Image 1 (tube, rainbow, N blue to C red):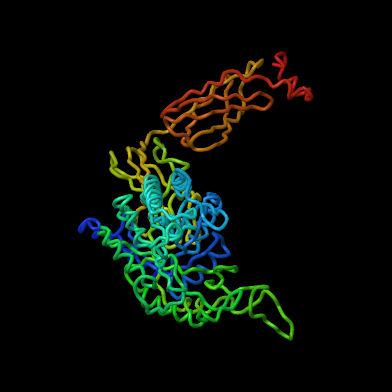
Image 2 (cartoon, rainbow, N blue to C red):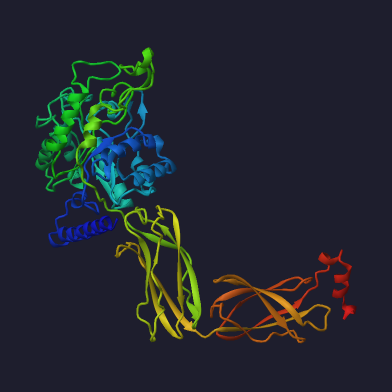
Length: 598
């Protein structure tokens, strides 16, 4: 465990130094987003899924984080009708626990066999929704729609100018909300013929986009590529150029010709081969064993490039036409071609192994443990270091912090609250010890944890107290909490009161005190003049306001609110009124309350 913690800490330090060097010394950032994903340890293995569900996230994590891998990627679709922040936050929380980085592809609304165009100012709705979520990582990867050089993806009519403006407006809306949005283009069909309005050649489409919105591609943080092995999704993994699994290289060359100077990081969000197995066997396609070998060769060669951030093959699980031949998961139930017949009888819904060979082959390929940057942030939601304290008094102060970042506290390294005294205006110190979250406890984003600071106030002085959450010595990115506290002499209370209809108010009373230090009860004694001896109340904070409640059996309690100071404080409750009604059925006590009982 110690070696794991040390290794993680060293890699984090190296990342900070590398980022500083590249951004400050050379002033050539590789991406617009806050963190260049290629500047940190990265696991490029990913998979495309259809639905934002645990049923898909679980096998996806098993696949992309296997064989040494961690923090792989998934590409997932969100339709405009499904902008449900509660459901998506639940899904994102699950991805965080499984160490999956989401690449979220936006989609409009399906109509018959095509997709509508985004409605007017839909980019604002997308920005509001996506910014409302706590993402698993600092970089928020968003793909703006899908293959707009296909008419069926753009209301049955390809329109480069329309898509360029939609992309431009969505980029601006997202960046206005947060610089953490890592905005990506729609992937294009590289081999679409030029037959407008149904199809539009990709290169011509990009040229028209540049004419409509000059510099549009320089506003991207990365480049999405659909590098399929075409034609027919059955090409060789050795092929290169447009329409191959290396098609992303051709696309970057086109972008350079259009004026893109930066080396855009590449996200291959769709790629992959059709296999012959499906609802209906297609023997013109390579079988799943061959496809498995193709994937292995592709990941080890064509996609083994430092330019590539993620490869998410299409697709993990699809049990219907038209994508059943792409599916990594085998068909089940009535649709499967091969039935299991133990003991001479057919068992539907069962076939082993559950996945085609490409899943098993990718499981075995060695992978890198990714370390995407996650913000460590906290907000103090309850508690304070008191502005005034009593000399030589012991304090136990609870401070509740909410996890406002993206990381799970204590997942990698123990999180602690550290207090520094700053510059004391007088000699001495508060000597506040650091407090750790217990090692077996995890605090997820938007959840709270209460630290308890135990210390003894010095005899005098004014102190600047700075509180900071840390993980392995690294400060959280949230602003430290700062308090100024002054040590004063204790508070003394003198209680004055009298009893209605009684000449002699002497006896015991109950004094309840409510305020910044909580609630406490104290038995006090008043003399025949209705006055207590001075009571040293070290539990009270000088210059704070408290509610004092004086109570005596058979009398109505009385409340006085008062700001107390160091030294003597007189709390005058006046007269306590007999509680006649509550004693109406208690003749003996009622008699004692009446004026002629003196």
